[in-house]
Amino acid sequence: MQFFPEGGNLVQGIQSKVAFKIVDRSGKGVDFRGSVVSKSNDTVVTFQPLKFGIGNFVFTPEGGDSYRAIVKLPDTTITRELPAPLGQGYVLKVNSTGSQLHLSVTTNIKSADVVYLFVHTRQISKVAERGTFLNGVVEFTIDKSKLEEGVSHITVFDRNSLPVCERLYFKQPSHRLILQPTIDAQEITSRKKVRLTLHSIDESKKSTPADMSVSVYRVDSLGSVEGEAIDNYLWLTSDLRGTVESPGYYFSQQNPEVDEATDNLMLTHGWRRFTWQSVLRRGKPSYSFVPEYKGHIIYARVTEIKSASPAADVMTYLSVPGSRLQFYNSRSDSTGLVRFYTKDFYGPNEIVLQTDAIDSGYKIELMDPFSDRASPFDRPPFELSENMKGIISDYNLSMQVQNGFVGEKLKQFDAPLVDSNAFFGNPDIQYLLDNYTRYSTMEEVLREYVYEVLVRRQKENFHLIVADVDNQIFLDGPLTLINGIPVFDPNKVIKYDPLKVKKIDIVKRKYFYGPSIFNGILNFVTFQADPSILSDLKPVVMEYEGLQYKREFYSPAYETQDEISSRLPDFRNVLYWSPDVHTDAQGKTEIIFFSSDLKGKYIAVLQGMNTDGRVGEGSVLFEVK
Image 1 (cartoon, rainbow, N blue to C red):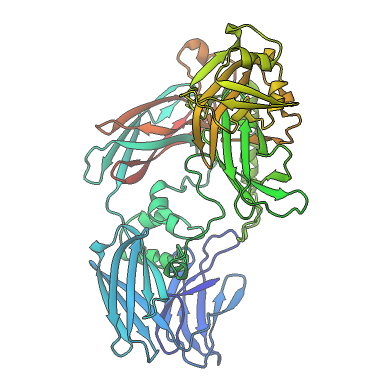
Image 2 (image 1 turned 30 degrees about the horizontal axis):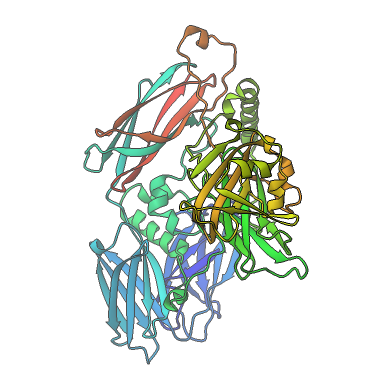
């Protein structure tokens, strides 16, 4: 049981609307009768929910009094204290009439003279006005045409630019995408071809191309086919917190009851998208995790081995050995944190982490990519009905049959289109060692015909220097890699067996890569993977799972009589699924799939969007007999 005063707080002596929400342990709203009583047990107001356990009542809290709500359920009575009213404050009231939105701000603060009204929809400013109090009240009128469709945030600030009231308002969307699926037969037999025709139009019945997802699945076992639809999410639930029960109801029709239920939802599930105090301070926000919109980000931390304290300003490297050269670098911040911004990093891999020093006094550790914090929200206890036990058992059997007979076909993936070049692109020059005389030492190979690389020796230590495109030598050594793994000790390169090396790639110029500047690049590529490269490097080597490959949805075809008569069982309960279905310029397309051996009722669900931002969904039922 929760209570939500409109605008934020109850204030003594000022009439307020109070929304409430009461749900059972599974999160579903319940019906009840309730009353608010004062400290002296006088009934102030009675109330009951309008829809889904949500409703509102209006009352005026008096100074020096306290209030509690008494709710009577069929099997029990619950008592809760109402939020304590403030001695002084502001109260916001919002009323919708026709094409206008009327707002009033009331206060009992004698020194209050002005307030500021700010309204935004999805963080786009729509209204900004200033109002002056007259007898403790400020009135605002907003033309609804100024507001975007969906959820708008209404905030009131005092003269010191401090937020004092906030609530949400919902404007029903009028621009809709209508998806019309039709099927060639309402009743079909098993292993038959099904032709699903899709037509996408806007609210004016004009054809429009759209992008959509399509799913066809069995519904016999489901108590309801309602799910989280794209229009419900984009217009409504993405701006609200908590679980919204039956969000499709608020789009079902436009009448006074739906409008009131929607406003009750705004009062109870409304929340602040951002903290106004942080915005007004104009400070830069800090984020523990940034969006991975270009690729997966791998986090690690560098510490000093002796003191175990964070090591700042240390250059670190991450390599992914393999046929495709993947190499990343990052410099640690003041807390020792490093971030490697990977690109096209897919599937299970072995990664190599190291710092740039030969005898490093630093320790680098990979950070767990998974959150270590539990959700603060309590989940309802798990309950399994007798009917669901049988359904889950059937689904379990179907899954085992599919895994047993067509398991390999269920594990097929689409290979992503990735750039197979090294991070430095095409090398300036490349030596294929089989085209030259094979020498027994790497020193001979480099001295005899790799003239871009100069080998210098001081006693027992070697140094490698690269000459640039103008044949001017760099004073410092290049970035030297063996299969993409940095090797900072030239002696290890000189001692490496040249018979294992397939080619040498050379970049004969300064190369700027992230926070590093390399005086040329040498990359030795071997015929086969060689774990001995990692000896004496003191790296951190571990298995790491990159981005998952896109799975190819398995859908068999029954075109011939032999395929129809096949003894291999087909226990699919999902007949078709695709996230990439597109209608043409006339708003039409066609999908073909085949029914399985499972009899029952099926539904095809479409959800999509067009280029104008219109969203919509559609569905059609059929039966397999």
